[in-house]
Image 1 (cartoon, rainbow, N blue to C red):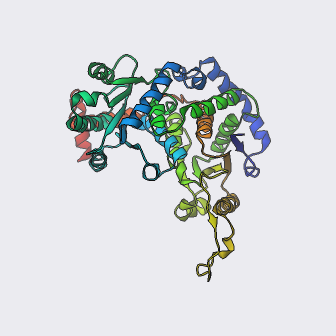
Image 2: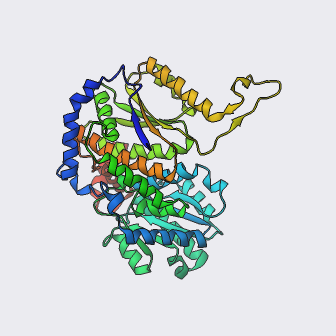
Image 3: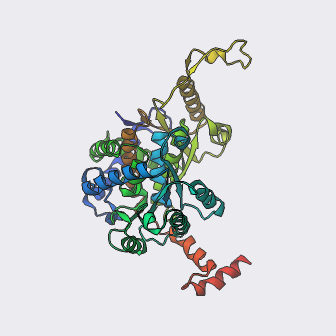
Length: 443
């Protein structure tokens, strides 16, 4: 089984009759999703996407990725939020954090997710003198961070290869028929891919938004989609053995007991960006109406030397969800050291993955004894298939969990608040009345 939700360490925190008690609410959430009559029902295009995706566009994505890999040294992906997190998460989970350094061929970098001039200058320095292509991702084409990055990247590309050749190296993932970016792409002749109207950004990784960068990285998007499709078949069925729903139920049972923070943890550093994707998925979906479980993350054993103390003995406000990757991409045999100067020969003559697992098991026991509930998501490995499988697991669990909280899991009204203030303080036309008010507050 590619992904399994385990409650074996929850016995002292959640009893089985508590799952029974909350299950009618899970059934209601499932019914709302399937009938598409719950809050946010206009954004349920992800539910059967692994089966019903646009096959013609899928083929064009693979062709574009092959072209990029053949004619470019660097692909820069410009996007923010769901327009970059999912793609980067999959690439680093499957290929590893250091894939750009360890592999020959195309290098992939992400920008447009920050307003830091230092960050963007570093990306420009990476591109100068190299054959590079750009994948700009924005439904509207006016997202501040992404549009600023794309503006300067496009200028550099045109300076290096000329406007005509630059137009063959720019790929726009945007609205199907409208918006600033779509209009510009059509005018310039850029190849375009679609951000579906019924799929929100944080659910978009298995659309062209994520699939083009993933395919360009050399990952089989057929395998990713097959994993998601098999996961869809399994987790779209209502029943007490639906692990996605049991995970959602466990989260909400703990929330109602005062556990307001979930720490997503993995003992594989290559999972770091998957943690970041999880935080957007659940943070934007649940954080509304003064409700929600705050999504945090750690990579162990690294963060045991920073956050471990708080988790063990700090405020009892959190629970942990461990992603247990059974098989590492690469293992390392530990040989005995003559003289044993570091005192670690007791670890010799076994694979390092065994040591990592014992660290996990010891931590689980310590934290459980310390009063921290431990949830576990078990998966075989971080292959393309299994990462696709895990993505759909998270999608179903998040949607159900949002409905259990009685919030709309598919909107994000609070995201606009900072943008309004930022535009006013920067003097954007149309925000003049707010500018003076905000400047006075800052004095």
